[in-house]
Amino acid sequence: MQKQKTRGLILIVLMAAIFFAGLFFGQKQSPAPESVSKTNQETSADSGGEIASTGDADPMEGDKESIVISSDGKSSYRVKAGKRKDAPASPFIDQPARMNIDWEDEFVSREVLESALAGNENDVIAVSDLIMQCRGMTVDVKSLEGQLSRMSQHVKAGNSMPTLLIPGTGENVKFTNFMEYEEYQLTRFAECQATRGLFDGDIRKRLEAEAKNGSVTARFLYAMWLPEERNSNQSNLIEWITYQGLAWDFTWANIREGEPLGLLAYGRSLEQSGSIYFTPRHYNYGPAFILASQKCGLENPTVDQKVGNLISYWSEKNMTQRMNQVENLSDQIADMFCR
Image (tube, helix red, strand yellow):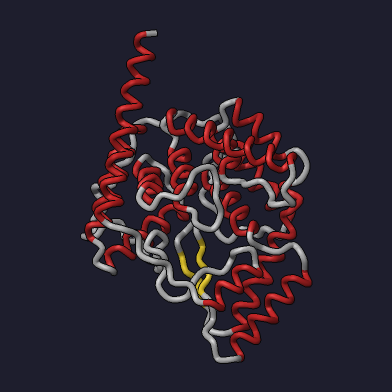
């Protein structure tokens, strides 16, 4: 009993240190304002918040696809974590990351979901990114056609094409003409429509049960899957409150066990500005926890690109202080939870 109390006291002291460090960093440097044009704001409202701002992106997100590991071109400082828990035996576990998943193929999409639940980190991140992508996508064809029509008129009037931000990778998708934009949106719509059946029925209950039974990937996917936005009533309120409480519990269970997916889920929740997950937004902690997940051994192309975009942006904008602050904080997080 005394040993448990001691561990609890140590954890509280360490978390307090991170908290005050974050406050100090936040005071030293305030976040840059987000530039959103009036047209893009109107488009975002029509599409459920799927269109990002044109021009410079939020420094948290980055705006390049190139992966830069450090400001001096070296990667030796990004030390991997110590031992990780052995994942359960599964034919899916050792599969490399899938590229360009055909979500419209029901067999493929079902296999990716089952692989994710079986413990494949790459596939669970891919599924969570699909959920994030489809959250802002309309389910009505007429609504989509109306949105595309308004964008077409917007471009014909001489306005520039919007830039679409992909939160998972921090990539800004740029379009040179309306046809590219239309094709991209139609493809996303088709993928989201084809995979709606994956998340019907009792899948949330299944995730909850497997998460409570210790599944690392089920914990992550539950935390990264927001309840549907419907008309507010008592039932929806209870569903939302239940989600927030369990998402927090599952994420911290992963973090306490030294699982990088816990750090990634916490970081993604902290950095999100479009949707509120189970935490408020925090300008410093969000990217720090995402970087820490990589330092703790998470090897995934999406996370690698996200980290690369963050560091590339800070380097390009000469935000050395900002970059050093997040790097130092991510080192502290990695040392605390997985080294």
